[in-house]
Length: 63
Image 1 (cartoon, rainbow, N blue to C red):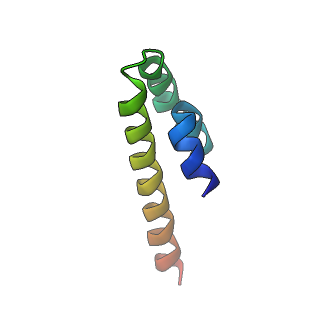
Image 2: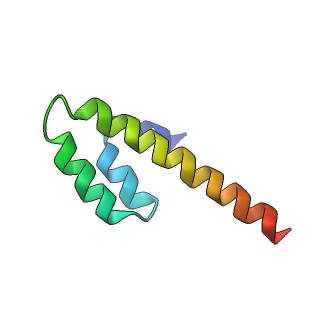
């Protein structure tokens, strides 16, 4: 839940928390424009959902 809020409010920081620093820098550049904030937030939420899905798949393979 906290990462979701972070993904919406500070999209670029979310990428650093999920281990994708290069995408975080690209997202920060996108977010520097007011128009780019919305696409950056959407991209961050999407990346977070993919990260959560990957974690669930990895957990299923370990069981």
